[in-house]
Image (cartoon, rainbow, N blue to C red; front, side):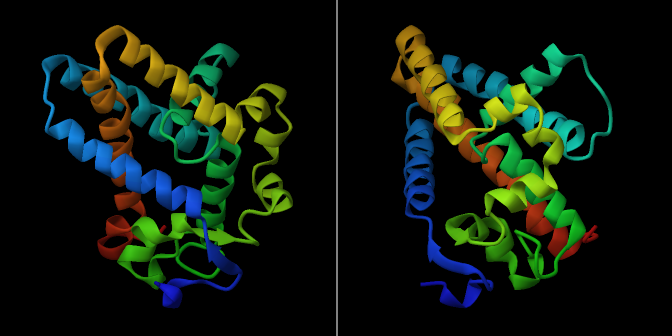
Length: 208
């Protein structure tokens, strides 16, 4: 399935990612069937925080080093971005720097020349042996890898654990409906907002 989308070096589908994204989308849809004002409030607050974590934190602060922040604000930005579940900090930064180094060419993790569907979503599904080698990630994100605090945050275990803690807290305090809005609908909304930059913006916008 989708074999024609496989770039060189991609040998298999990452089953865990496919399963998580499938479940997340199903639960996001279920959340829309269980509307509550508390749920909407949780969604808006956490969507804003997570979106800022990606755009302000992962992208501008860590990938492009566009500005500097005190260490405590830097760590908070990293944690907010981690809540987006778009991969740990090290991987996200490395992938985005690869994208700028090889924009829409071989070596770009979400190469838009492979088509809208690939650059929007399918690139996440595949295991790319070259893209995701630890040495490749460290080479493109050496500043993250050599920072003890940021490197600690750059762990898939930490990323999942942080999300579970937030999920349990919201469920315990406000109930499962609010949890669905604050966790799964929010995650899915931020996913597609980010992915449209990879797909739609590169299909109809400037590739740089």
